[in-house]
Length: 488
Figure (cartoon, rainbow, N blue to C red):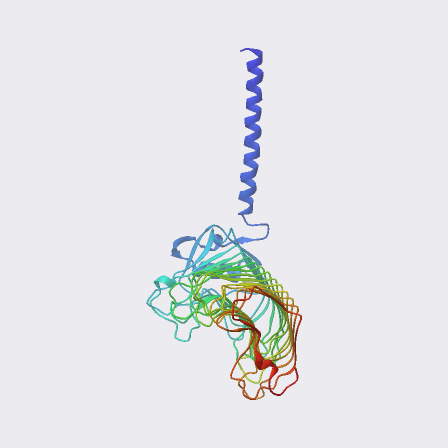
């Protein structure tokens, strides 16, 4: 052989060997990611097959009961014909939510069951569930849940502490009517002294779940348990196809004035809603919370629904840097709504700032007993749809509206007294806002909500606002604000 050819051949052999070594290393590294780490027990060792055909319920429950602190679910579909009961002090880990999947295997004509179930006086703590998929049978389910409490992926209605649900997928749960859904966490309302503490739900996907399309977290109504520390971050939510009842994607519910849920963070979540839901994010009886960086995209709207709803008893919260967009010209959607359903009720000390709200009929509403609210530096835009309102304030006190840019809304702002006993409008400051291309239908840019019999607004200050390119025939401020009694 020619010496140059021999040298070239040796170089080629060396390069091929090097490439094989590098490629093999990448493959081995990838395989290691899909294998149990030291100290984990694989569920196959307990007889689970993961073939999507055999019933793996008994084998998986045995693995949970006797498998040690960490359980490994290799790639496969683990069919279950009944619920699993999780155990405290355990980590469940799969090879990824599309690789390691727990599959609902119930009979369609029978009442559905919850894939993971914990109830009553149970206490569940120090549990991590990660990199697993949960697949329901909603489309085949023919029998409904009598009380609406069956048909969930995770139904953990007991005292909870230090629970983490990470990088999981929950899809096709619910009975298609009025029961079940994605994930429900926390004790029943009537439970006494059960706590709800340190929950993390991160990087998960919730898709096509009926009734509860996403995540429901609730504290018990009786005092005595610690209820604090909820983080819901970087998850993805979609609506529900064909369900007769649809609730909220994220619902955080304290137990009442005696059992507030404290320290809640909801950030970086994405909502792609091409089917109808009630509310994307709702809080009730929550103290000290932050909603930030969430993206809500509505392509379908339920009449009277909201993007973000802050309800009775909430306090000390920040709603900052969220984006709410609707593609529907005929929508009846509210963007951010602060509203007491009970009267008299209070929602106190909120900051609503730096949000973007576009294409909704009512962008931001502060209503019914809300007090100490700052609405600042938000960007609101519409299409001059009839009756659209940028910022609405009714029956509220101590509200500052400052530095907002409101574009193409029929009413840039609307204010009213309310129609309940002790309703009022007091200590309201509206300043340094910009109203761009607003007006229409003979409306005032800052409008009064009528009827206003008994109008008694006190300490209402409107100053230094700018209107640009208003729709012809629109007034700047409703003259009602300058008539009658009250301090203005």
